[in-house]
Length: 463
Image (cartoon, rainbow, N blue to C red):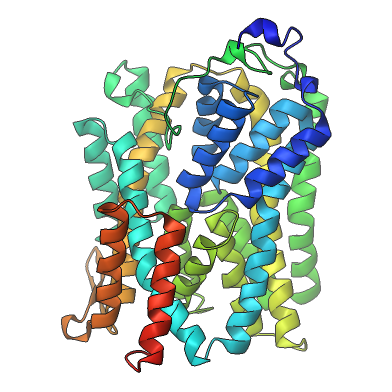
């Protein structure tokens, strides 16, 4: 295929209806976390449809990875915007999230109504054990692409020590890494050359010139100041006016006000993708707000891993439980549903703001070395943060008891060795072997572990 195949090479070359069908297909196939979701988008949009080329895809991904929030959903919004302006971005972003919203809400209802039923408990016991293997796979996938030299490995190690041993807030780690990468790239240090983040799924490189969009900047990537201001005000209003209304009507201590403010704040500071977000949520929602327990957090992640959509949809489950347990005058199920939808709204509306406001400028920065250096350093730091998350999951999955060590600058949660759960350990080891030794897929591994958990319950070993 050559550039002459598409002589006009404009976003309008793809009919809007056809684009909607493609985005719906991507949404229904978006299992397995951000790495798998990005690989699906790359295969369909770059290799099959040839909407955009390899370098443009990675440039968009690089921008999304340095944003707070779920990079896969933001990447879909970015490419949708590139192809069909604002409405293209809205359709792509909403469709990417919609299957997860419906699935997690249905599972949340099942969880609170039937979660104490033995078979359901057995199912989630198996899922929690397998989630550890999934997170470890995320560490290795990102690490293989990000830790190309000793500088990147040192950044990952430093990030792990800072968050695991000293309890340094995740946003501070990421911002510090980004500054180091930016300065390193500006100085000409080749160690900070970007490697593409999660990257592509492999195969022959599709050149930008041989795609529908081509190499040139689309007209809507050159907005006027008035258009930029209008975009900022619109999406800020959609995001923050509901938060302000809840604070004024219900007060700051109401559960819905807390959900709105907490997840709005989360939307601004959770850099590095879904797994990094979960590390921060576990630190706050579990340990500070006590909306749910660590084991329930693992159950929620198991739900998100086995349903289409971003893994960050687990935040809907977190808010659902928080509102369900503090419903006020509402029916608990109604409160939980509203709380979950509220968290989803304030989590994803800012994603559209970051894309529609920033993408026009980022498109004009393709090839900027300093931006690429910041990305490389942030991605390396995220490897250390996700490793911390894997250990957090292991401690709370494999052991029945933990204790905190808080002395001076040290802030570490450790397991009680004698409280190890042998069946959880056996299932986790089996899941790790399946994924790393036999290359079993995420869905196969999770389904097998869930079935094993049910079997262990029926046999009387767990539950």
